[in-house]
Length: 444
Image (cartoon, rainbow, N blue to C red; front, side, top):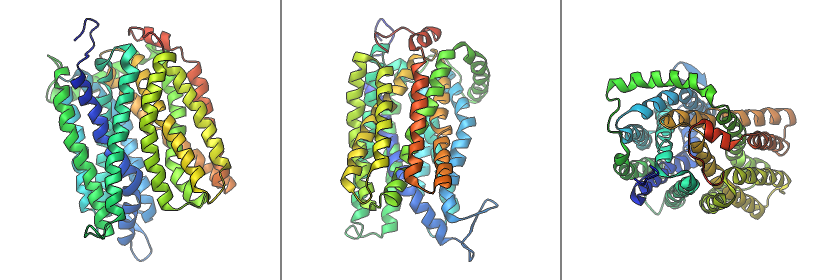
């Protein structure tokens, strides 16, 4: 460690970067592309004569299974993640806790290979476990950021992590798309190609997590909670944090701002495919090209905007990305139907600001949370990112119900970026850093 107390060993940072590389396979291959349509098709094959399925005593249409499973997993995280954060802040072997959740998630993802022939209940169960574990592991992984870089280097480190994530997730996605597109030449059925792709995401996640867990062991605490004591500590820490959180009003303001503008981001991600196919009348291959393009430009955006933040500060760069997000949504509203190239240009622009806004929000948040409670506060951050990401999509659905038009409804998303940006403008980052007892970076 250096005299300022922050690790500068590059190998430790690379180990941390590789966790973004590892877990992004789940986000891209599983969540973004394959599991939704595939799980729905498996449910349809197991439907009764009336076209309904029964899951754990609930009757539903097959098309409802995937969103219900995701919603339940997100709802469960609201209660679980703060406990995980409390444990991570006090446990002796923090990298061991990361490994537990990463391997529960990755093994559950591998087992998706066995979801076929009407086994929709198994698919829903595995997806719920994998998604909960994904969020819990992220809380632990993000809590390392304050240990990995001094304040002036944190934007760069966070941006490189996101860049690794887009590179890793994009690489595996390309390999799986090759398999899916040419499944006959590989001697498998289309369904088998999907199941192999799902399993590959779990294998990828598990293999590269090994490097992360080994590399981060040097950051384990010399003393800390172990065994069943760790669970008790998790509940105690949550109680203490909920009492202390009022001491950091500027940090709370940042979280509220993040809730709004991140909900806009998540809504764009959630509805972009539906908008492209149903409103713009584009083909599925155009959507696949757009997904790959987003991965590439998001990698570039994370790195370039990370560099820009070193000059003008992360807050200004995030605000700039929100302006660009707003412009992109307005242009999307005006896009003509049946035109692939303009849609791909918009996808490239969205990818560019996606990488920067996510990476710099993470590093900015790490500046305004108290030391020794990093994981606890990152659990609130993760909840703000995942647990409230239904607000924008719900509002979009209501707007569609009122207007009957995806094109008109998409304009509603602008409100989330504007409100989030205005709230972020009012956050005094330097005051938040001081309140949290952290050293001040040169620029914020």
